[in-house]
Image (cartoon, rainbow, N blue to C red):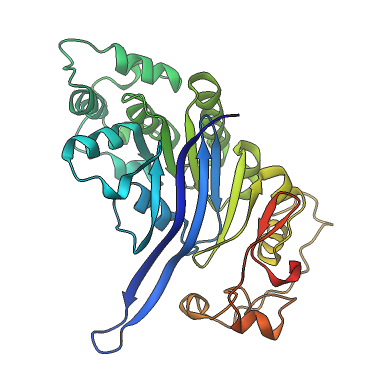
Length: 320
């Protein structure tokens, strides 16, 4: 049994939105809990605005949580104060972002980023050694000659995303946080990036927090998955159990929305979108109540607990 690398417990993030005189509290992440084991690919999935990116930004220290704790290798990283410990955490937990063209300055060669990462985190100057850089590039199917003296505009989106992953690998991290890493890559190249995560997991024991709205790649690459909607995890468990036999009405809707290659297999579900995103966040009870075909009056007023159904955690009163 692999050990827990990171544990997220009761994570909550509240924003104040609106004008100065009419601000309201919006709970963007609401009591979210999950854990990622060594050599595990864990997916947070859901539509835009579900809160999954906010979770990742809190883990990376780019946002401050309102409540909860994040334990990394048993230590609460939200209590880290010293710059040395912060740097060690940033070395161990690296991020891959959605748009690779925003990751790199168009006026700098990409190799400069690789040398800079090696020096800042490992204290190794390019004049001393480039072994780590070459190994990282090899791991993503590139060589130093492929990137030498080239600028970001000279690469495709898929190539640049691979270079972004190589840059993260230079520090020899334990965890990669990949936020929609294939959404801006050509469809023909998406699976090569997703396959790369599987290879890094198998070859180096790397763990990945994969954030996506794409259930197809999530099913292919993940060990476990958590489905988020308006700040809540509504269903979580092994990817096979959650996506083969979805239990929460929102998970079912997401799965049904995947385009089918057979034109005879048409999507005939009706989705009620009379509530705005902000109004759904502000709902009491189940945030999905405004769209759910099985909604009961209790769903709109009661706090919805989690239920364990065959090893899957579901936040839905249908399973009470």
